[in-house]
Amino acid sequence: MDASDDLRTLIDKAAITDVIHAYCYHFDRAEADAVLTLFTGDAVVDYGPDVPTMTGTAEIDAVVRRGLATFFAATSHHVSNIVIDFDGPNAATSVAYLYAWHRYRDMRPNSELWGQYHHEFRRTDAGWKIARLTLRAAGSKDFHRDAMHPIGRVGDDA
Picture 1 (spheres, one colour):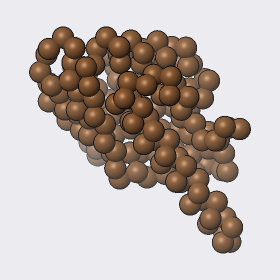
Picture 2 (picture 1 turned 135 degrees about the horizontal axis):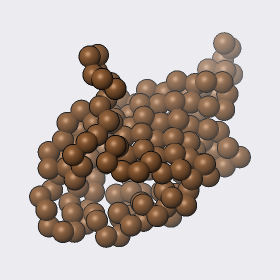
Picture 3 (picture 1 turned 90 degrees about the vertical axis):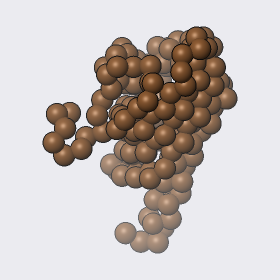
């Protein structure tokens, strides 16, 4: 790999990291339209076994928009420890550690989630976009779902 390849890799990693941060930022601001622009048209979102997997921006939009408008009163998503791997020049995967806090409109207790976002990214004419997002949990407190995908610790079943 030469210096120009190294530079391209750094630029792409920064761009992908920006998409991950933008997802959290726009979700927390309840900006459903902006969240949707971060996905490819055929993207798949899997928030866990208690939620039907969404395929395509129309399904993603309906679930995200409904959640932001009627379920969550406020959220705060924090990501760190982002690891990005490339599969050629136009595809990448990532894992981002997640801490998420939620306040609900129905006055149930606030919740916390510790976990990971697992992503697949695709380079498009508009830049890097999320082609797949899977939410995995290490632990939670008062979270609104009973079942979550595990993070994949050695010895976990999934």
